[in-house]
Length: 316
Length: 279
Image: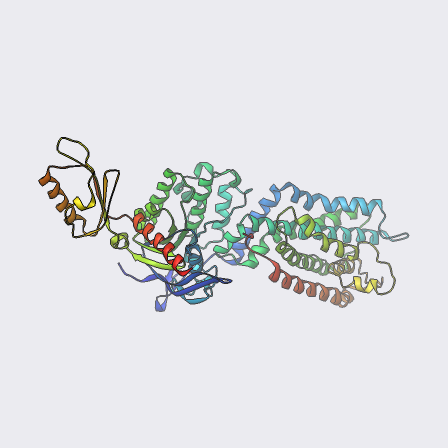
């Protein structure tokens, strides 16, 4: 696999009046990968993605998409680009298949309309006016238009927002199929499960900056793992321990006890778990409801979002 | 290497073709035609209003004045038909279409693809111009039967009248759409242009006093009626009958006025048109 960047963003900035939505972002999307751009609402995801799509010029920095400036040389890349906006509309008086044919007419090498309708489970809705489609069906039609032109780079802004769990999984299957065909995907989402499911790499945005980037494992590696249990004595009676009763755990970063439940945060899950289990066996304790988990993306995301709140309070 | 497949060129840059401009515009215009046919209000404006207007004002009110020849009356009816068609089929319906496509976020979607802004504006204009031309042709046949055939001195000028009038009003429609928030508000926002343009368009005789008739010649639609009268019976602004060759000379001023208004309209559209709803 080559690491040729399909999207390369260096020092990108974008302002709306006094508000700077994108504040110096560096980002690469490599050929054939899926990069998930995460962030809370207002973090600047859509503003950044619009720069990549060439829909707006950057106020500073350099952006290359498929080898060209996506805004000034848009005509040279648009044939290789599939875009799904967060909010784009349809004429509600056209049917599903008429909307597809209209879009196909603007493309050089469209895929067969019937085939794409079938991929998105819209065949039975082909002759229905778009105004009568459900929200999920419209979102699928959105995606159908984005992939109709066999794009090399697909930019999906919150593609599964508003979809039911089943449709969401269908979209995931479809995106995985596109990745297998070699399509490069830049996707924004606030469903962390979606990023864990699909992404080769994630980039987490906060207040206009990318604050963490890497594989899902890399993005969460800085976050401590957690261990939780309810201590009981040998005969089975619940015990309330103080944190000082616990053995010395080398990786421990935080510990608390709430209504008898012991909660630990550790940077060395395996070693500390061993110590803890040995300690429990020596004392004849039972660790009921024992849970030991590596950090999840959600946890990493939340801790970054919370530190953002602190930053902003400090700044204010 | 073919032009339709993705081909690597020197330096690793890739040519990524899109559909030809013509094919793109035809696909867009085809969808716009479907939308026109399915919108009862727009279809009524396009098909019935011009005919009804001519019926009401033209045949009942008396056109061309007393003692006018059949050919002059027939020409006056066609002027009225074309002006009303340009106002409602082109100006009013196009303003509505631009606002509707913007508020439905269709323009935003089109601009994510290879469609340019000019193409997005031209697409709904194509069926409107076709309908206007068809009305003129059918209107010619109708007045030929009912009143008597008007002349056909210079058909080129008739085409210039239709296309020039459509260009002026199409550009003004895009400008008007810029300050129309909803499809309903178009009923109000199109009024100023209609009220200012219609009385001087040459459908009704302008009182021949002072500078008024001179000023009228420079309003956006007056050149359309001048060109139609020249094209049909070869009648110039002073009422003289000209030959085929002479009509070209007489058409210079009205054509220049149309070009000027089109340029102004495009400037206004560039400043005024918006491509996404206000948030």
